[in-house]
Image 1 (cartoon, rainbow, N blue to C red):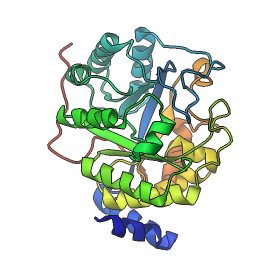
Image 2 (cartoon, rainbow, N blue to C red):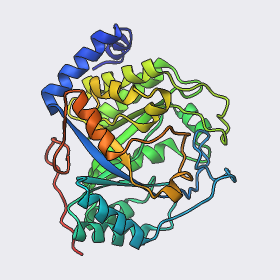
Image 3 (cartoon, helix red, strand yellow):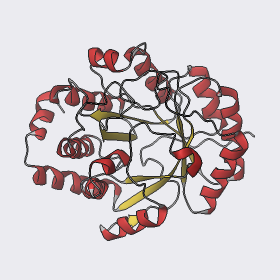
Image 4 (tube, helix red, strand yellow):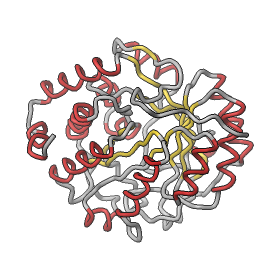
Length: 329
């Protein structure tokens, strides 16, 4: 698909675009919606991204990091509650590389869960260690492929390094996830189009698209929220371009509109993330200010109300030749 063709999709009538995406989603992935358990185990971060409430220079947030024992215990509970996947997410820092290998091994040996990691940029050797320990997927959002915009929003970070990490993950056999933010100051439709082309080239198995939700303790606190319509259009076009990708109806959507996650599922998204972070820590993990989170029961109810079914099993990507690693623990 060429740049001009994608730009034309953005100009199509929303309902026409959404119907095309819905048809492709049901043809390639059926009517299953997979529910993932999201554990935000640490809000410590070494970066200073202008849009993120976890940024290093936010002195108003209380930092925390769950112990290995607590993470494994919560994973076991998620397994017992019927989740097929646990997503281990944190701010970006390098203090837990070796311990994370042990955590992955323990979760794999004590549960039947697939493991998705969302831990930021690390060396290829570190990614390989985690993959050999049993990690299945890795989510590393690119946010934007516009180098000037990237350098402004993520000072002291390198877009080239981010891209290199994504290709290292691909080479190591992870199911690779990435994604973008809609509504960044200075972002254009051309930028979003080029982002989608990059993600198509990378052929991601997971595609996360969410709106900008300004956090009061960041330099973007006075920015406008991302457009719901533009975010939904981008999700729909992402589905058309990547028919087999898992696309979450992100929690950021819920901060725009209480029905936005349902709208996203109805036009091509097929994943919901349910937070299992302990309540005493959840308030300190705010990349953006969020509305009341959805629980497992309400997620299942929403899925059924849309005429879909709750996905069974681990919900791995249907693409091949990916293979699950058996832990050597």
